[in-house]
Image 1 (cartoon, rainbow, N blue to C red):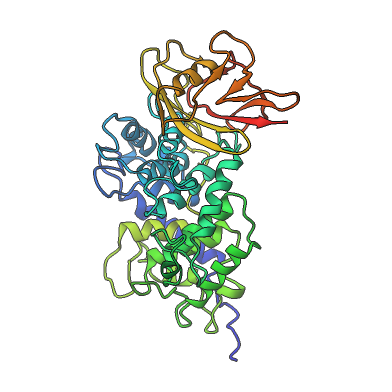
Image 2 (cartoon, rainbow, N blue to C red):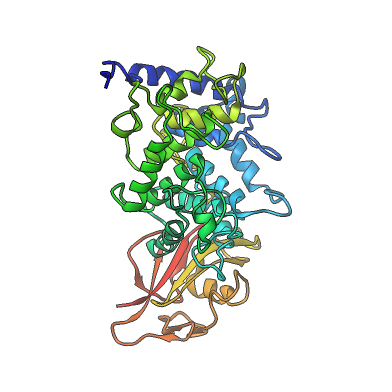
Length: 447
């Protein structure tokens, strides 16, 4: 075997240069009104790429006009009652979570009436627990895990209960193809689909969904995916041999999956005999110094989508990144609505786990004050939850006392109902527990 050149992989200086130029190019994609998102396909994934590269969305402005900064304009876009259209799908909300969080917008508190976590909870599938949205579109489940596990609270806590993530982790495992990868469509229970070739892009995303949800890189499912990607490496370039040939987007998704799992895409299994890596391939697709990346090696112009996927990957990011600290004077790291507006309908995310079954729903209600109570949320859930059936009965039915029974499960000795908000330690569930705008509520029965 030929010796690998001493400078076989992209150096830190080359990566830094690529990141700087990539950010410069993504800035050119901003609309004159400050927007990145609009009707149809748009460039809003730029927010996760900016964050991975260390640029705060609030610092991205058209012509230096801070009143039109990208974060403010994107928040208004998500808060608009007409978004995301008349026939939304779960991936609309998942995309919103990933990019709002990366932009420094609390996705559960976009506005007094927009809670993207709850909007996603509304797409839980009672008929196929573990799936989000139409089960045949498996990518909806993968990106639900990425969004819900990646969008921490402003303090960095996991706001979604682990039992919920674990149920969808099991679903991702069940859809892993025989070759170790995944595809965009559901394969669980279908031997022919499980035997079909996997897709580079979706394998990267599915890997990320597992690792972000707490699955270690040493797990057999992640190890098999890693082996699959390794088998698709092109020796001469470091590209992955994707379904439609070597391209920047597929490489970007695969590298982001490796990044999310803490697997170095420049050493070991991902350094070819010719001394090339997937990061080398990405940087080779970048126009210098303009910073845009082309989709395929033969292209002569940059592609916005390819540039976003490539920058995120080269910068070391997975599919979600915590927002950087802004450099704009006085700009906070996070923006969020602070309280309910009486008379304005809103949603809250709720899970009910009685130890044998898990109920997941979005509760729609109209608050009468700037805060509400757990009792009021549960009462509303009994009549206005999506999917329905999240709460069927509560005792006591009124007052401020301890919840003694929920959905027919009654407190018994040390086994009782406990409540947790935004991932905090569970405590005895009481009807008078204060619930604030955007709280993610988890009720659990146990000792």
